[in-house]
Length: 350
Ligand code: MRU
Figure 1 (spheres, protein in one colour):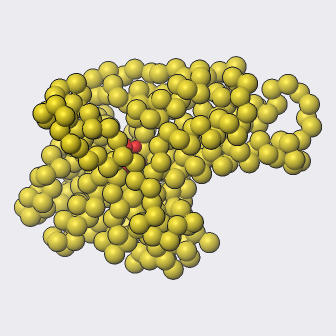
Figure 2 (cartoon, protein in one colour):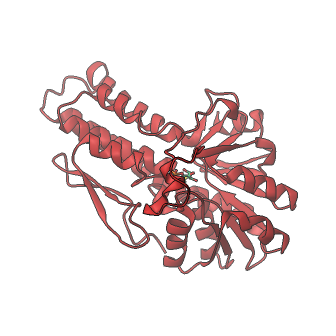
Figure 3 (cartoon, protein in one colour):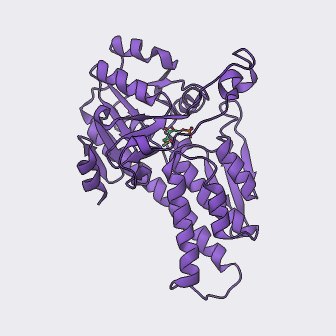
């Protein structure tokens, strides 16, 4: 039941390069993108060839190795990659880890190895460690989440938004890891995937993953969620996250806040699944989370088809913030935060 594709891979040793599954081509084509320059890595992140908070962090860590192979400094490469997307905190977290390796190589116990290529070896080892840790975190979230949702009856309806699966992480996913684990435990979840306007991560990516794994999956337009809930087809909602503030307010793909509000209105529990690397304790609340604004063409000319008058004014925030009070629990790789607030978040992370 593990993923039959490779979202992110470093091909080869220190002479190797970064290979990404180009998610802009899914579900029609399974095409890999070879990144040999840091510019190619930046572009891949920017145009969502690789996306999803943990996957962006892992790709950026390998991207630092790509940049150092081009004889650029770690700081310069990190500064550059940090400009690719602003909301997912995993990007900045991974880049800080890579900067730490470089700084220890100069000032710390690893300094003075004197072999050419040794910094690159250290950086590649760190990127691989970040990748491997993410894989393990996904597995842990799957277990904690399936324990939490064990109360659901067999065949329960679970709604998810965007894509928080193996395509969005270095492992099996966050929200989808929980669903995969429930399926492994014989719970036969029936998943409703919001299509997720405007870039259709739910339709293109979540449906692709769920169908590949033989999970019962039904695609709905985002605007159908209220009706599907009223018809009693949804017993729980679970999504991923891009950044969680110290008080538990959670930024995730645009439309998540609507889904959480609808879930509350229909008495359906709303859960978030995210690794500890998605928490940002430096900010007090969701109001401080930077929200990425994307181009008008994604809405007026999505996938090459013009669907609005030329010159139409557009507002296109890529994420929204769900207030902590709408979140029933946050499932992390260290356990579950119940009654989400500043003190429960802090006690899990301390
Ligand atoms: O714009 P995207 O596709 O990168 O947005 C992704 C999401 O919002 C995911 O839900 C989030 O990153 C969690 S992925 C495990």
